Length: 310
Ligand code: RI2
Image (cartoon, rainbow, N blue to C red; front, side, top):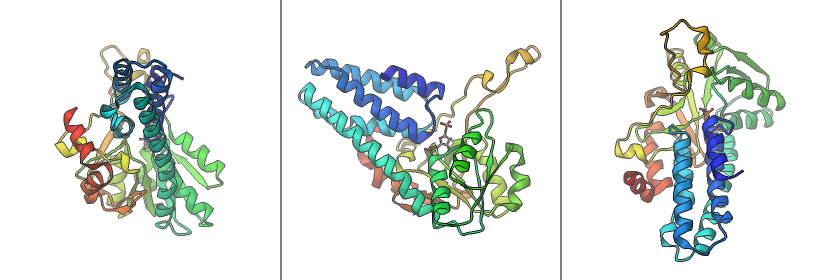
């Protein structure tokens, strides 16, 4: 699949999940570099810059995509030949994908220590990181039950229940509006992340903030499972995270609506840090208020500088 097809598949959500879209973007840039067999450094730079823009534009909210592209292109300005640039991009992409894949395992091991046998977990949408924590605890012999929300309109919850059922984890599907009703039976909430802001706020699938609200009211710990490349250097500069809105047809066939009735389809929302118990990352379990330090330490000043250049 070429870069244009990858960008199109990310935009259409054939490729979805903040972690997977990041890895796919890194691989697409690597392929773009390797597919150019010429020795014109300027032409290769142009192709990669064009590919970078197309990938970043494909889904505006998940900072994982931007962080992946930046990590893959880092140091490219110093390349003095097309061969050097090709090799640099390929090495950076491989390193990002390897780190990303290992991070899910690390998060699973760290996060599973917060799950005790007999616990009932609620999860929203379909997060590889959050499911990794649940499946690790289950594999360690802990008796964990899960409630998974349907996560309208894309119904990613169906992917979650299939994944957990395949792993042998007892799972119950509920509709999104049943969250506050079921919260009395929940011991802990585990969700993924699309973007974590420098003030600790979480940008995640629409409905996450309502889950957090219900958990806070019931005094149920709300834990976010997120790789460090989900943290946003752009928010260090005060930037607001763009909340992607998708087509009305994902919610309802517009022909079923009376004329002039509008449909709004935001696919992410924001959960303030005060509703978050902790964030499990591959470098450890942190307070949401440590987000700025994670951005500086793990993504680095270079990433913060690049974010300011955008
Ligand atoms: P992992 C998904 O977004 C969900 O919002 C999920 O919480 C997030 O990506 C994190 O995914 P979408 O692609 O990286 O379904 O934990 O819109 O898999």
